[in-house]
Amino acid sequence: CLCFSHSNKRGTTMDYRNLGRTGLKVSELCLGTMQWGWTASEAAAVEVMDAFVAAGGNFVDTADVYSRWAEGNPGGVSEEIIGRWIKSRGNRDQIVLATKVRGRMWEGPNGEGLSRVHIVKACEDSLRRLQTDYIDLYQTHFFDADTPIEETMETLDLLVRQGKVRYVGCSNYPAWRLTHALWASDKNKWVRYDSLQPHYNLVHRAEFERELRDVCTHFGLGVIPYSPLAGGFLTGKYRRSGAAQSARAESVRNRYMNDKGFAVLDALDDLAAARNATVLQVALAWQLHLDYVTAPIIGANTVEQLEESLGACAVDLSTDEMARLTQVSSWE
Image 1: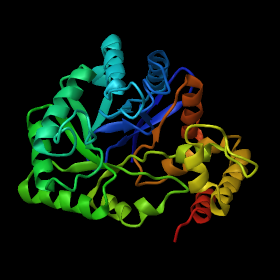
Image 2: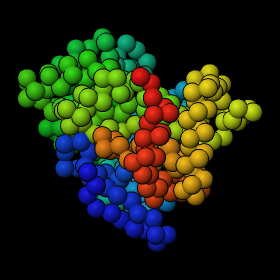
Image 3: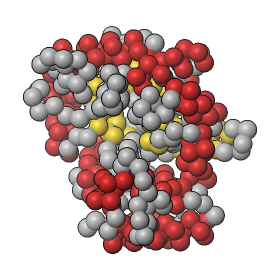
Image 4: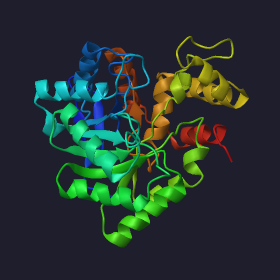
């Protein structure tokens, strides 16, 4: 549910929503930071984070592994940039800071995973890089088949009791694994997952909607979708006449550049024209109107890109418009 609003000097209004069943209030858009130190410089990252806060945003998401896959990037770079920004701005108590654990961060057999050994060290490392003594939302990045879920949840419970973590969430979990985790927490009276970060957008709905949506709704988990714009496909820069040139172009072409994907774009084009909005803004607005979605995760390399995404908060889709988008993108 919407709780209260913040208006910045540009007149943009940012609403706040409870994270699932918790009392924690987060902005309706979450700022993703995978690109910090990869495709966005630290100076650009600082400008975007400043603008996000000025618009009323308080929810910032990162991961320890960002962006270890890039040449010369050891991982932890995004966290370090955020940590320096928070320290320079003195705004730690105004930011809901989310990070993740699971990926490989050091050499050796325990350099990745969700074992007690890995989680405890990874949490300490993230706290140091973020220059803080607590993480608001600590998320397991994807599940670890080699570690009993009981070991993972008991370790997360320990971190909460120590005051190093306040809430815990998960990402990329299948429904059976998420349900197992919730059951283990309930049985043992440990902290439980209060959010899920799924891959979810207008052209990638089945993975979340088939089973995970019901689990989240029934057990009161907040839903924080990543890739809400389908790697850029839902920005309108990919057309039947050709694809935009980018690092993601080949993946987007293979996944979404088909008759169904273009039918979704056609509907977005029509609604964007009628609303005097952009395709990107209407695609984000569709998610913002879903009562089970807490905050889509948006990325931006520049303030201009951020401001276009923020404009989605002002796009008020009608019941008929929502129905059209839901129907044209249906997977059933």
